[in-house]
Length: 173
Image (cartoon, helix red, strand yellow):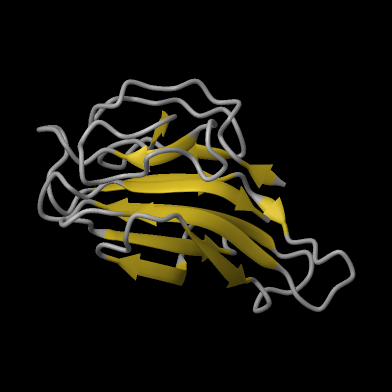
């Protein structure tokens, strides 16, 4: 299934705002701040995407400009739980577009749990400024057998400053 966030309502673009997501990917209680739904450019020049990956739709991002989000704090985005279906193939992967632009970008990590969220394995991570363009990642899920119960999560961590917005779009399993 493709999650492009286009069906989600936009949220106020301030660090620390609560942003309810209604699709297969959700903000959670207990982290430091929420992923925010946005279209167009982020508020702070020199960081964040100018638009979503297809131009004209929504994406989610962490806003790092504001007093409510301190350096080193993080926002978590959780998938719904699902049973891995390789559809009769030997391989299975997750793909997503990500955007990490700015002089104080922190880190973005993708993790998986096959035990109900007790333990998390890091599948992918990127750090720092990755430029002005959206990038695409393909993450293999081959290490998990057919039918494995999985949950995935993205963790974005704020760097040392306000020029560190991190965006996600078109998450597909």
